[in-house]
Image 1 (cartoon, rainbow, N blue to C red):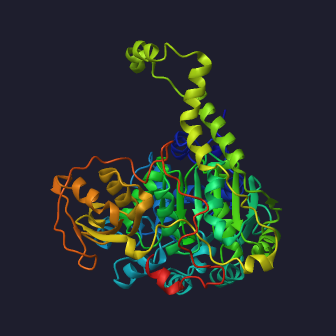
Image 2 (image 1 turned 180 degrees about the vertical axis):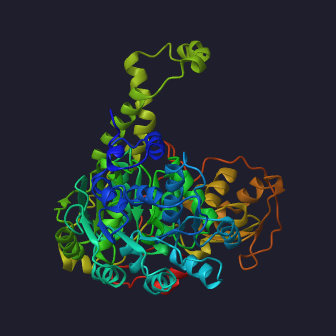
Image 3 (image 1 turned 60 degrees about the vertical axis):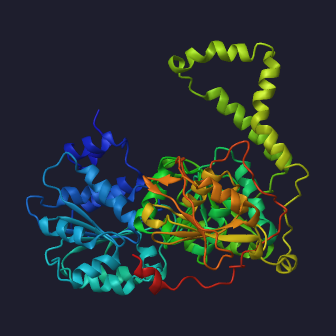
Length: 597
């Protein structure tokens, strides 16, 4: 039986490669766009949601149309973020692995420009780039686009949203007028319409579903809570979904980092992704997320663009986006490749009008959901554990030698007693945590919401309760704040809940420890080493008395704070510390964001 991609006009060596990648049938955008693009004679506008296969929709035709006997730039793909740039470049390399002399170069900020320049100098047919870095290379006169035949603007709406209009204009001015421009976008705001008129001649326009609509496989829910209960409600939603593998969206870098640190302290597998991280740190976080050693990725809109991770079960809007179009991009991180997913928004009463606006744009109704009770969470967690036990794979060969000792240990227990005790290992911690848990649902009362005050999540005490410590480990050692928190707590046995502010520098860092735990911290680092180097901690010059320094040994654990039955989850009703209310804050300056990409 012929592979459906053959019938679209794709050659055998490419089809064989994508078949190994799991491509069985073309998605709707691929089925409709590939025959049009293969003619190479039209400008093109393709509107489709994220996760619908747009990279293959333009990537496969490019591989068919370019002359790979020649080693000069013939196609330029522009996209908004580093992650998406790398993803597209890797996909094109995978599609063409059975072809000869295909050279694809990824050009993006945050990596060595010298390496990218060397790759370009060796010869390249396809350049995949973020606008900022691409313009830098053009200004150095290090690349010649005079023979480019095709320009692809991927995620065009987001590139314009991030302030790349001038960069795109400058880049396209170096390309021939007779090139073909292919524009792909999830939404069609007026800015994208203007760019299509400016750079295209009578383009073929293909819309998969109504413009700006959301994925039909996504269920949209919203929860109304008081601002002070938002973090507690968020944790309860996560606990009610024990198998959650999600992305949590915040509005600002500060909010992203604070939420991630609070989750790590409360024992969840979480970490943050935002524009202040180095490329090495971003890569490390994404590697852990793709490998599922992270359960929750806390991200800003900009940082999350280009994340292509399969089987994301939930997208959680901790804060609603400033622009409605961004909601479509956020929710599109789940329900990819035909699967289903849930997009959750946690709001206060006066934000209900935003939900109604989003409903009009995406053409789908939101379900008003109730924050689960403590009893509901305990029940869900219990049966989640039972389900996990029932389906666990048993390595018969490895465990067989221990079975006699295990059976001896349980000899005095009946089957019912054994099941009760085993289930209670996890269940007891949830029962204790959710005992007398309050109702966190709030009415749709805008007046009550406006009186409610700022968002709050648990923090620990006043500044005078902490001692600020210096430690000779920092970002050059690969540490993020979450990593350092995990390392320090693992080394000392001090609960993450009692750690204050963490400040990561290049070759050193500062962290605040409760005064009562300072002696314990120093004792734990007497002989500590990290990768063969002695670890020193000292009281910071502005942190109180001068106590000298000590060192200590380190056994690395698997990142970001592991949640288990003994983890200290914090108290939902603890009101210490507060987030600012970001609902009226303007978005980060576009010029500053553009510099990072």
